[in-house]
Image 1 (tube, rainbow, N blue to C red):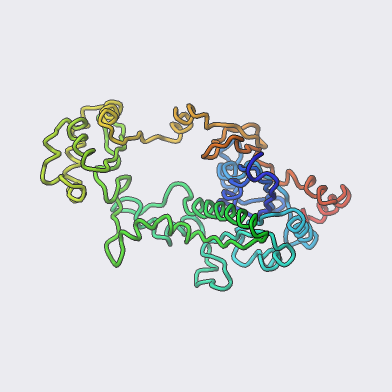
Image 2 (cartoon, rainbow, N blue to C red; image 1 turned 90 degrees about the vertical axis):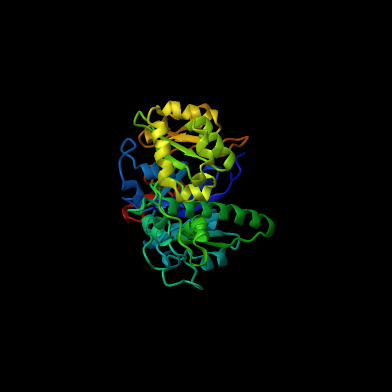
Length: 396
């Protein structure tokens, strides 16, 4: 039995934060019923067509779910949704615009009066607590905007230009906090029998992840500088070119490793005791001079040779892999981390979620838009005629 088997999650979600959270619940066996707009669905379905005509974002965050199309503003569809929540749901998740769920009758206060054991998780950009809305409550909140507001962009990039993270890190942070808070709420409900509201803010989630730079800049101090792929406060730690045009990533953590690096990698042991470099803070201050020495030493070596020396010296290292390289990564293959999921376009490769269980995760298909509408309505007692009437009225 999977850990969340028997639990039902009803989710009004789009894009990344909420779908990523509910996919984790589906991976653990929860039944996740995804409410989508008739005709268009989750707008992430249309982001691109990179996966055999399907959206890369949608394929990533929506496996193992059931898709039910409802025009939630249509009175008949609203009644379907109300029945679905009150009769079936253990958890409701939504990342609509702030206040929208309450206007649809899906706010926690409204739902908990009818079903006190219900857990409701609201995900928004800046928080959606009516008691403490804050001045940013109603601002639009896309991933890039939250990366900027949380200060993440200000400490990421090069000295000349700030950069955002490649993946949607603000969405991912919020999705993971939603996921873990829901799990905690389920544990608490098991003890008390009562549900609760969870209010997840993308800003608060990413601000937590950015707290090392925050503390580094404590009490008005200068923030860590933008140093590209190098570490802002440890050196040498980051990318270095090899003589064959490739790049090696390496990182030193202490003075023992610094001595081993000079002796076994640079093969210039005297550099370890050079007064400019005898402590990390000195190496950070003199990073340009030290970088010149390292680049010169690596200029006659291939990436493979540099990596061989780093391994021999027990210095942390990595290759700078492309997406193509990750698809073929030998460690992922050796650990059996690739599985397959179904989709409207056939079988697709999919990474197993991190972690291992005696009973593996559910790896169900990515749903077509509205694929499960008729089956779910029939489960609620709607006849084929009633379902066709709803469809004719554009309610589903």
